[in-house]
Amino acid sequence: MMAWPAIVNGQPFFFPDTTTYVRSADFPIHLASGGRISTVWTRSEDAAAHRSPTARPASPTADQDAAAPKRGNDLSSGFIMGGRSPYFGFGLYLTYLLSNFWLFVAIGSILSLWLVRLALRAIGIEDDRTFLLTAALLALLTPLPFYTSYLLADIFAGLGMLALAVLAASRGPMGRRDRLVLAGLVILCTMSHPTHVLIILAMTVTAAIIAAFRLLPRANARFALGTGAVAVALAVAGTMLTNFAIERTFGHPPHMAPLLTARFIGDGPGARYIREYCPGADFTVCRFADRIAPTSGAFLWSTDKRDGVFLFATDAERKALSAEDIPFALAVLKAYPIEQAGMIVKNSLLQAAMFDDRWLNYSCKAEARCWRTVPEPIRQRMAASPAGRGLWPTRTLSIIHYGTVGIALLTMAAAGIAALRRRRDERDPLTAGERAVWAWIALIAVGLAVNAFLGGALSDPQSRYQGRVIWLVPFTAWMLVMARRQSRSAPAFQAVPATPLAEASPVA
Picture 1 (spheres, rainbow, N blue to C red):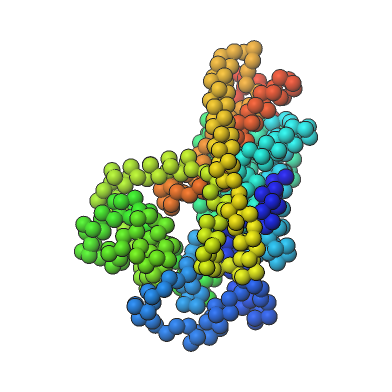
Picture 2: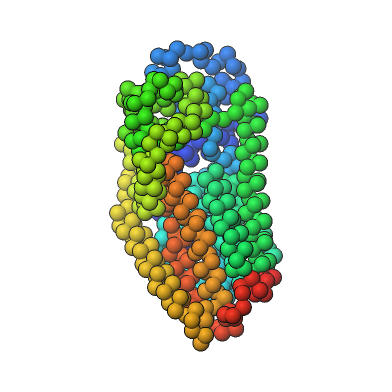
């Protein structure tokens, strides 16, 4: 049910970063096997350059080095970018070897359905009809199935957020196995992408604050806080291990893309700083003052030399841009605090409201250079798919998804007003299930806000950033409806209104 977009498309959906994830696993496996293991993803020039340092280009001049755009990760020159999880890459690569990526779609779909079932059980709903109805509504009216079909870590952002919320605030029956699987899902979330770590960290801190006011069951709160802390710690340790391995292999740690530099230049204050303070400011970005990119995406990834910077810079310049990213951002903030702060807020709000489905169709299907990093056999199947031919009705799907989210927000607002009134009515108190869902909403709202900030203020607003988690809004609104319905049909699941929630019976 949750895999129907990939089935209709004839294959899962690709994103340019998909190739980076796959090759981050394919390359070391190829090297470790002495070249005996190779796939269509193996680039022989990368392996040759690594085995024989003399095979690498010998110190090209700046003009030669900037003649053509480079790859983000350039193994032939030893330039490795950070910010992507090799652990997710190995998992994705394994699903390619076993099933041409279909296993990845199946795992995301199964986890989604299992989490829906567990969330319903957590508010006391066990019947199959309600589960199937809930799953069908998510599959037909929200972006969730499209992200289970997307070959990125995006699906684990929303699943991890919901798993942590269910762990922290559920009042229904939950067995030890379910708890452990939920904890594993939160850890999977943080290990799959750096942005997920910050989202889970923010939600964990929020859960700790709510628990301090005795608004969460003690046992659940302790387990959830421990899970969040362990998940964040494991992600940090995993990143440190990855950096150590890369430094041992290539002689230097990975370099982050200068996201803040690109974002602040695209916002305007960064470009203004370059015009007014360079070259005296002595930032490497000052060397590119003659081609200030109109957007952060162009600065980082454009293959047009008229506005692209990062892909045309020399390796030394790219390393310097990475190292100077935060100092440059702080200099811009110091020079224009109000203007840049205003852009941060504006971009975050823009990202929060941006979750259309334009990404479903591959926009460059007719260009010879389109998806040039994808192996030719896979590229041909991509071109023949509905996404490759531009056949997905993205406008219609966007209208459906925006409409669903709008109705969900109105439902929450109405339910919130009703809940405030019921707090004063001893004849109709909030049930334990309703209280649980409201706690989920509070935690998930923090996660959504942090996600919007990371996508809009620190990166470049894109529909997939918020689209990957926006399905949680209609889901939690629906859960409010189900919890209210459950309160009328199952009085035994009522909460005692006068008793603090922290004193409720702990979940087994």
